[in-house]
View 1 (tube, rainbow over the protein chains, first blue to last red):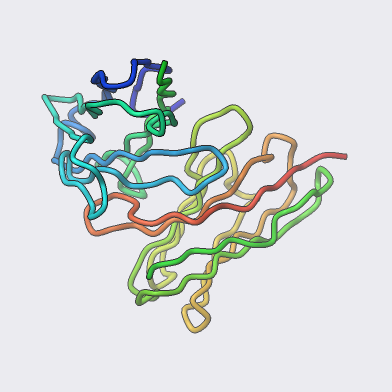
View 2: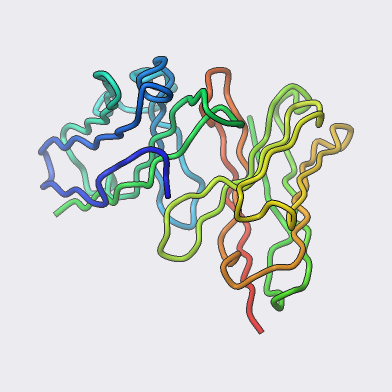
Length: 112
Length: 118
């Protein structure tokens, strides 16, 4: 069982915006602004799309944005495109174990 | 550029052993913690094991503790995962991953598939 809770699936139409949540506790998501998000097309390498809650690595489009409130972090994808269809995972710092991060269970994004 | 390339996967019978490797390039390998993460068919990503940059500390998921051993050779820029007493539930694609400065994974390999089946 994953330490961080994500919805199993979300969907949206091209051009729309969707938000994926990542719920944790005060020992992980709520502790520091160390939440990251990954896009994963199965069989390929997962790709970092956000780190430290809302920072985008170079080459990641501004359509991907992140936020955090309390013990829940969120990934928002605006202007949905067909190629955004993938699995999305969050990772958060945790004070409770080693290594000092935990994975979310993943969310399947379907672009209708 | 940073590259992580896994190798050594394949089909193995239950109870047997297998060692997979992760060859790194494009960065100062000996200064980064490396993780193994797997994805079983139809499942999400699951952390498997971690080795610190200097090899001084290792951590394992409960599901593999006592059966898997992670090691590294910083002179060869390579991390290994020795998997013993393999079970059907170990069937997955195994990814190696580099940890960035603030508890995130900044680079992943393409993964190597392992199927445990008789």
